[in-house]
Image 1 (cartoon, one colour):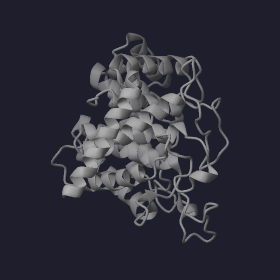
Image 2 (tube, one colour):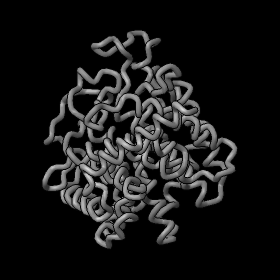
Image 3 (cartoon, helix red, strand yellow):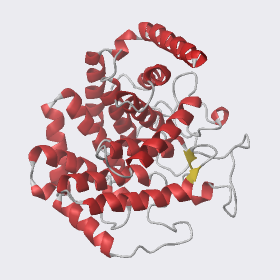
Length: 363
């Protein structure tokens, strides 16, 4: 116990020294300014259909930026997005990617109380529950890829809480646990992206250093999804402890593999093959860890230095115009095909979510 206390005190001292060298980055006005700049740059540079999963992640961040800044301009952008989409999910009935944008619809509904903001999603999920899912070799379950755990679970739980309908929470529990059972690696405390990245797949894949492949962004999606589920679940919800324990296990592992620049590499266990921090995975990890501290699930003395280094690292990726650079393009595995010029809307969304929690911390 004394040794653990000593280590925690040393980490806290390092954290304080680190903060003094980068003090401006942690000032609320500075964080808000960075969030506004990133939001407005991205809104001026749209990409993909507005209901797309990429925008599901981006607009989750935009809503967080609105909550943080109170900007009427940001609120207007949220309303315009929903109205353009007619508050509908994407067209694929069972596909979690097409449900991601509904997280923001439901957040807006809680303020506006307009039923058209939630009815299309409710009707879609009711139809989904009544329609068998057609499985396949790589997709033996509905949510067969780990990123899905950010896309759909928060939307399902929000819907259930808003409507007072336990069936949506139970559906999330069932489908989430299926993904956990299929893809979670009990040794590494990380998720394989899908079955192709498990070592018992017919053609197992490994990194150049011989280690298993764990995608940064995929695991970032998962941690972000768990956080957003926990934000919604009642404290006495029977299965809440499952999500809390999973979150803590992943947080411990993610903290262990943070790199010296405060960021995480596109492939979590082979940093040497993927030089340079990746914005989207790093942004979601920062968001999740900061949330864990703010909500009492993670020890502040242990994890605050991790978040601090991560926030400094993330800010080093922001370009002068507000663009979030160093974001890996769309893909299904870790790659090194990006630079300071590389951006994607989900990279901005991850940065905004991170800022919305970092600003709440006691610096």
